[in-house]
Amino acid sequence: MNHLRQLAIKQQNGCVNKFFTIILLLTFIFIHKYTYSQDEYELDTLSRNDFIIYSAGGIGFYYLIHNDPQSDLKITASTIINFGVSYDITSRLNVAFELSKLNFPSNKDSLEEAKGSLTGLTFRYKTLKSKKTNIYLGLSTGTSNFKYFNYKTSTKVTASNIFLEPNIGFNHYWGKTVGFFIQTSYYYTNYNRIVNKENKPLKVIVNGKEENFTLAFSGLKLLIGLQFKF
Image (spheres, one colour):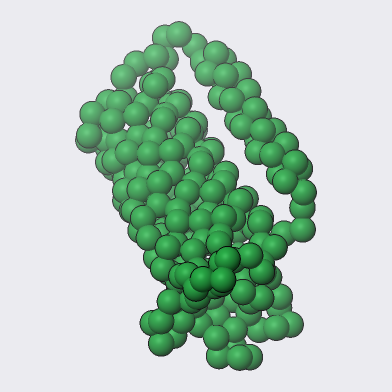
C-alpha cells in the first residue's frame, strides 16, 4: 500500500502522546480559569429553543491501525473545516447536524490527493450555563468517508463507515448573538472495506493468506470557531 504511506507523518509515537496530553491540559486549564472568572449573578439559565449556526477550523492527529505487514504507516494528520446547525431542545440539551471536511497530507509532486468527510449528529449536554458562557460534554456520530486519488496513475480508493467522537467544549458569547467556541474530541472510525474504482476490495497478504485491507483512525481533534445564535 505505497500510495497510502504518503499519509504518514514522520514523528515518534512518544512525541504524539505528549502533544495530545499538552492540548488536553491546556483546554482544561483554559476552561477552569474562564469559568471561575464569571460573576455569580451571571449563572442564569440560557433560554431554550435557540438555533445556532457555527463554523470552525482545526487539526487532527491520528494513530493508524491496519493489517498490511508491508506498510509502516502509523501516524497521520489532517486539517479540518467544520460547519454545523444546532438547536437547544432544553436549557441544557442541544442537538446539531454537522458536516466536516478533512484534508490529509500528500506528496504534491506525485499529483496525489487524500480527503475525508464526516456527516452526522452531535448531542451536547451543558454542564455549566451562564448568560454568556457554556461548558459542554458531547457525542458525535454519523458517516465517515475517505477518498484517495492519484491523478498520475488514475488510482482511486474509497471507503466509508460509522464514526464515534466524544468531545468536550467551551463557548462564550461577546454579545447576544455572536460568540466563539473551542472543542477537543477523540475520534475513531474503522474502514473494514476499502475499494478501488472498480468497487473491488483492496487485498493484503497476512501470514500467507489473502485478506481485505482494513484501516482504522484513532486520535485527537481540536476545533476553534465562531457561532451565531438567533
